[in-house]
Length: 68
Image 1 (cartoon, rainbow, N blue to C red):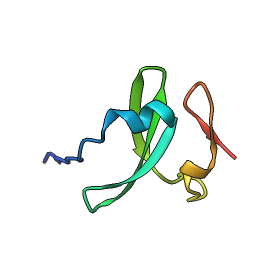
Image 2 (image 1 turned 135 degrees about the vertical axis):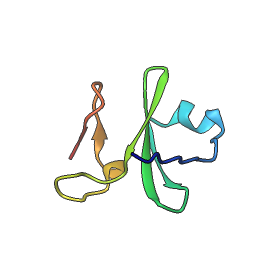
Image 3 (image 1 turned 60 degrees about the vertical axis):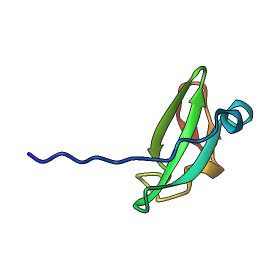
């Protein structure tokens, strides 16, 4: 089984202090959504797996779900 290695440019910490989520380009492979929940930042697909909708335009709930 092969392994995949991805790298992403580090973002300055200050933008995530003010934002709860931010969509960014990921290594030329697509887009990811960075979401801040408490003191942790999570990276997920930028698009809904059901409808393909951009998650950055939804509402981020306290448990990490994005709803429309």
